[in-house]
Amino acid sequence: MTYSVAVSGASGYAGGEILRLLAAHPDIDIRTVTAHSNAGQPLIDHQPHLRSLAHLQLRETTPEVLAGHDIVFLALPHGQSAQYTDALADTPLVIDAGADHRLTSAAAWEQFYGGAFAEPWAYGVPELPVAGGKQGGKPGGKQRHRLVGARRIAAPGCNASTVSLSLAPGVAAGVIDPGDIVSVLAVGPSGAGKSLKPNLLASEILGTANPYAVGGTHRHIPEIRQALVEAAGTDPDAIRISFTPVIVPMSRGILATTSAPIAPGATDADIRTAWEDAYRDEPFVQLLPTGRFPRTADVLGANTALLGLAIDRAANRVVVVTAVDNLVKGTAGAAIQSMNISLGLPETTGLSVNGVAP
Image 1 (cartoon, rainbow, N blue to C red):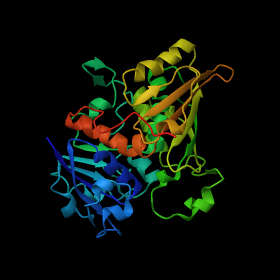
Image 2: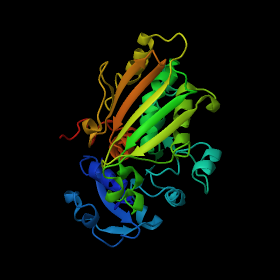
Image 3: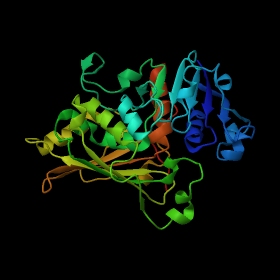
């Protein structure tokens, strides 16, 4: 079966990456692409790398244009997706690449985003452990089982899913203390979107590293806490995280260095086993051998998260270094991987574990 697709926000980075991956998907027919200020222009003028989609024209983003497809991707700025929810009630599958439907807490939404709170949808990070869930009839399991047959999916925030994947196995296994998590991320500016922002001009970011949203203000913090609460099955107040992103001069990529205290009684073998067991059968989340750590270059263009784990007994902390391509595994790849699960297609369809080098 071939599924008809509309992609909103198609002239932006997230929308363009969704289109790039869908263009190679054997079960997808990209019929409609939409934009706001760029409506009426050829897609190729804004996504010149998408040569196979040169025939498409950007249309106005309206409920009427988006309706009538099997699948709609909403790659819109935060706070703009929810307005289409009611109008797309008859659409079999809607996937939001924005933040509107990620959070389950109205209070967290008000604190970090503001505006009207929207209904939470199935969270699009299949590999995350879920306490008390079931998969294959067994206790425990992954977020994956909640995506099977889901009609509404919230793709993750790129920083949030990177940090969550880094620590969720240790939290779920009880080998780390989630009450003192510290995460510092080197991130590429494409994660901030394509709109012109003076602080992201080349002259402002080349040759420097720029911290932002310091001191617990970044919008992905409640999303991380939510994912780790799901993994641990614990009180949200038990999860405390210091989160500091730093813009660095690479167009794509996230390198997250995240640490947490070792739980009393946890052995080195217990710690390593927690991550090995969690990701052993995952095609897109891979734990590197002891002593090996990833680079962002290793995951460029791939739907892969690579993790390196160190046990620092002198500091009594576990340190996890995780690399992802923020536009693929961080956003578009996660959305399409979740789409495949929802539709009952092979999970890896249209997605690659291989990066591009050099």
